[in-house]
Image (cartoon, rainbow, N blue to C red; front, side):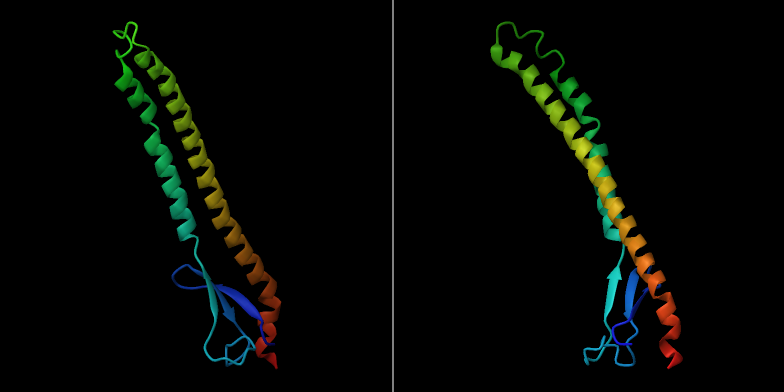
Length: 138
């Protein structure tokens, strides 16, 4: 049964696609050595954690921006440049909120990729279970 594969899990927790083609392990290509596809959800979940950390890091920025602007406009009088500062601050507050929303969305999507890959690996493993049982029966 050249090219038949079963997904298994290595001791390190990585998903492994092992070739069961026979003693050559070359997937019917005639080459020596084994071929394996490894998958780990670690990079996806670390990236999701990084996105969440960025979102968390941005959380106090709005209040820090407000504290930095306290009293600034009170003594401004007719200085229009200082009056415009309020508009700029509001713009930055909107941008910060948007960035936080994007970080939250990205974290969720990265975790969804890790889950989907794990589910796909399990489905492939299950689909080859009947074949794997009959490989050595010849």
